[in-house]
Amino acid sequence: MTAHEQVISRPVAPRAEQESARPRTETRELAIDARGLTKAFGKGPARVEILKGIDFQVETGEIALVMGPSGSGKSTLLAAVSGLMKPDSGSVISLGTDLWTMSRGEIDKFRLRNCGFVFQGFNLFPALTASQQIEVLLKFAGVKRAERRETAVTILKAVGLGHRIDYRPEKLSGGEKQRVAIARALAKKPRLVFADEPTSALDGENGQLAMDLLRKAAKEQGATVLCVTHDVRLAQYADRIITIEDGLITSTNADPNHFAH
Image (cartoon, rainbow, N blue to C red):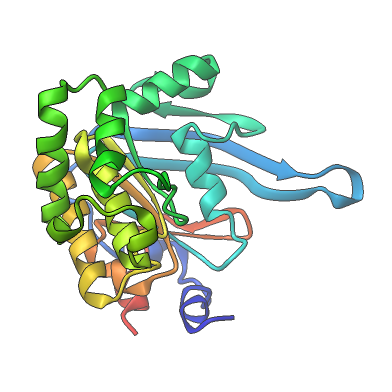
């Protein structure tokens, strides 16, 4: 177990303490409202329950972190609420739309219109330059050709990659690839941003830059950011920290001071 996981998996506080850790002073509309989510893999003796009946809400414009030890269900939860993986049961209301009642094609269109994704494995196209990674996405999102390059260059400069605009992934470091992925996720100004370990390949300075961009998207553009992470450094950027362990939510408003070390 890593040091990060040891911190995250410490015994949780009593529920009353959990819910009052970070006061909520206003009530906003829900961007994501998930109810009764379950998900299992395998059959018979090999069947493993990953999500065990999760109720889960994220408010519009909120930066919410989901933290927990490896195998707790973080990435599965992210996939279920973002339309990437259908849960075995339960519902997800996303931006007022009942996500899992739609066809796969309708869900794909919903994600294209409304969602930005940052994957732990970057998911960059090997043959495309940093700028082209973003321009292709903007093309599918309906952005005019004249605007695509300009938008891509602007956001790559914002993540400190102005000197890498025409570099392909093979010439980029792991941290640079992750910053391209973050730039791509934010380029179309999505209403929802889903991030799976967005700072896993970044040092402290670049990690701070990445989270500053996600916070800017939330606070200036009204995006809702849902991030799953082991990185305890990110606690300071969150409006709310949700903890999960063994497929169950253990706190919906954890005290960020628990992750300060």
